Length: 215
Length: 224
Ligand code: B12
Image (cartoon, rainbow over all chains, first blue to last red; front, side, top):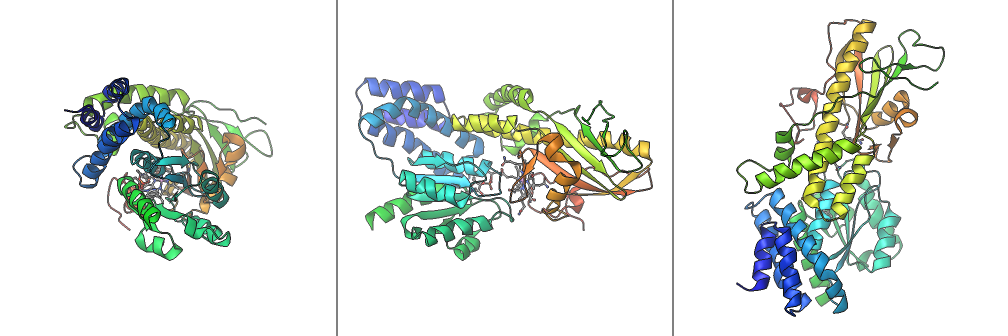
C-alpha cells in the first residue's frame, strides 16, 4: 500500500497519531506536500464524508477522522505554505446575529476544512458587517451562515440584502443551514445553496467554487 | 444589598426592606448539584456500545467531563410574584470558552463531548433548582401548576421578561441577544404558574406540553 493510501486509511479510522507520523515520514521521504494533502488527507476525508452521507458511518467516526486530519495538517501546513499551495477556495462561516447555537456551524467549518477549503470562522452572534467585512478582507468565495432559531433566521436575509446594497451579491456563493432552515427558505431569501448537513455542505461548496472558477 | 445564598434555602435580595416582604421575593441559588449520565451524552453523539470507537470515546468522556466540571459555575436566580415565578439559570461562560478552544484546536470530538456534557449539566442543574424551589414553595404554602419554556409553550419574547424579573444581568451576569437567547448559551429560563394549593408542584419541564416536536431530548409525545 502506498504511503498516501495508508494515511487515508488511518485517517478514516481516526488514528491521529499514526496519521501525523506517516505525514512526517512522507515528507522525510521527499514526497510533494500537495500529493500528501490531496491523495492522503483530503482523499480520506472525502471517503468519510461520502460514507456519512450514505449512513455507513456516524458523527463520531467523522469527528475523529477530522481530528486526525487536523493532526496531519499541523505537520503539513508549513510545507504547503513553502510550496505555495492554493486552497480549493476560501469560506467565511458564522452563526447569525442573535443566535448562539454553534455546534452545527462548528461541524460545517470542520467539513469545509476537510474538503480543502481555507475557512474563517467568525463565531456566533455575527452581524451582517462581520460576514461581509471578513469575506472582503480574505477574498472569500463562500459565505456560510448558520441559524437555529426562527427568531434569528431573518438575519440571513439581512446579510444578503447588505451584500446587494454594496453591489457584492454576485461575488459570493451564499450558503445557509441550521435545523429550522430549509430549501424553500433559502430560495425565498435569495441564498445560493441550502444543505441539511455539514458533509453535503462541504461537497456543495467545493463543486460550486469549481463551477464558478471554470465559468 | 448583596444576595446571600445557602444550600437548599437560597436567600433573598430585596429591593425594599430587609427580608422578603410578603409574597414578592427574589433569590439566588449558588449551591446547585450537577451530575451527568454518560450514556445520555454518548447516545446524543450517536456513539453506541457496538461502535469500534466506543471504548476510546468513553475514556475521553471521563477526561472531558473533568474539564467541564472544573469550569462550570451553576447559578440561578428566581423571582416569585403573586401568580407567577420567573427562574433563570446558567453555567457561566467558562464552559463556552472551553468548547470553543477545543474546536479551534481541531479537537472536534473533545468539543462535541464537552458541549453535550455541558448540556446535560444544564438540564441536571435545572432539576436541582426545581427541587430547591420545591422547598421554597412549601415554606410559602404555594404550589406550581405549570411550567412555561420558550418557544415550546410561550413566545421567545418572554426570555427578556425572565431576565428582567430575575435581575439576571446584575445577579448572574447573563445578557440577552437580539434573537432573545440568553448569553452565555449554557443558560435557560422559564416561568412558573403558581397556585395556592401547596400539594401541586410541577416545576420540571414537561415534554407532553411542549410543542418542540423534533427535539432530540424529547422524552414523551406532545399531548396537547
Ligand atoms: C443542543 C441544542 C441547544 C444547546 C446549545 C448547543 C450549542 N452550543 O449550540 C442548548 C441546550 C444550550 C440550547 C438552548 C436553547 N435552545 Co436549542 N437546541 C439544541 C438542539 C437540541 C440541537 C442543536 C444542535 O446542536 N444540533 C446538532 C448540530 C450538529 O446540528 P445543526 O445545528 O442542525 O447543524 C447541522 C445542519 O443543520 C447543518 N448546518 C448547520 N449550520 C449550517 C450552515 C450552513 C451554511 C450549512 C450549509 C449547513 C448548516 O449542518 C450541521 C451539521 O450536520 C436543537 C434541536 C434540533 N433538533 O436541532 C435545539 C433548538 C435549536 N433550540 C431551540 C431553542 C428554542 C433553544 C432555547 C431558546 C430553549 C429555551 N427555552 O431554553 C435555548 C436557548 C438558551 C439560551 N441561552 O437562551 C429550538 C429552536 C426553535 C426555533 N425554531 O426557533 C430548537 C430547534 C429546539 C426546539 N425544537 O425547540 N439548545
